[in-house]
Length: 423
Ligand SMILES: *Cc1c(COP(=O)(O)O)cnc(C)c1O
Image (tube, rainbow, N blue to C red; front, side):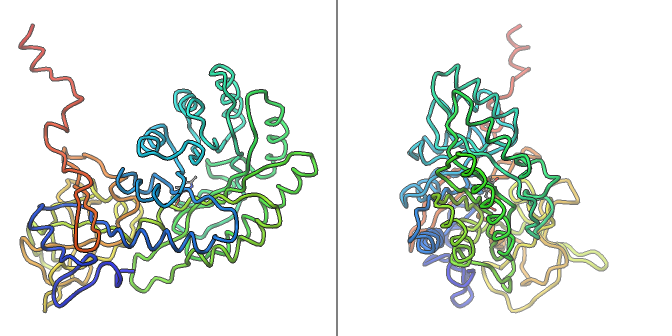
């Protein structure tokens, strides 16, 4: 991973064919930097692994929904997996055909459901009985049938962080697999609904793929039970969740491993396959580039204070996630330090007690594997403009999101001082 797209030539850290320092000096920091080649290679791995079976790969927009990145997935023929009206909006804007957009989420609002129906999306992945009733009702009002799949919860442990395990019995997601047959029987009787498929998504950052097999076998059994009841489906959607490298020594599964495991089961059902990878398509392709504002030392501790923080990359703070961090210019000496942001929270860190090149004020650091759930989870906490985003393609780079400015941050707020002036 790091080796192919983010690597040292001499003392300089490169992204593809460009020294990152050159971009940082020019654009100023912080910014997210993405390697187009890394994204393209991942897409190709997925397409290759599943090329012999009818498969729709729907990129999970929540991992990173930058329009220019979405366009790369669109241009490769991928569909889009969404979890909100906003993501559907961005997908349609970029040009995804609505019949390649799937939509999951436990809390779809009436407005979002109507928006999806009006646009004729491929599938609402339905997560409760009540949602099914509401979709049927709203589709009747719109005067257009809605396509649905039932998201079943196979009660499988993906052996990942509890916050990103989504397929266990007590999770808020999906419908218990034991209830699913009954829900399907009700669904096929509804006037304004086309029942087209079955869906599951067991979690994220999955490094051991065996739980996938368990999940598709359980869901596959259900498909056969449905057939017996005369309920024929078209799509088997197995969700996303494949893990990536956060530490250089991490052993990660690749799309081929997933294909070898799940295809025999899916083939037996005869259904077309849908995949929803997010992190594994974009995660390793991105880095957050920041500058050292200050360094300081207390009795037993060194601190490296960056100009980006938990508002830019939340994963270390909320999941205690590890991100590998490299100096953009290699140094001869190392230190052990906490690498922190400027936010007024103790949880605002990128790494604790990390051995790292002895960087000084104004040096740059690259936080790796930040392409997924980085910019898409970022916020304006502490009234901080969010980072720019930059795409590298060979020896060229393109700004794909401008840095926010102070006026942008207050744009939607009522200005009480102006009102007072006018009174
Ligand atoms: C988040 C999510 C995904 C993508 O998960 P990754 O781990 O990023 O691959 C896919 N499907 C659904 C329903 C999701 O909620």
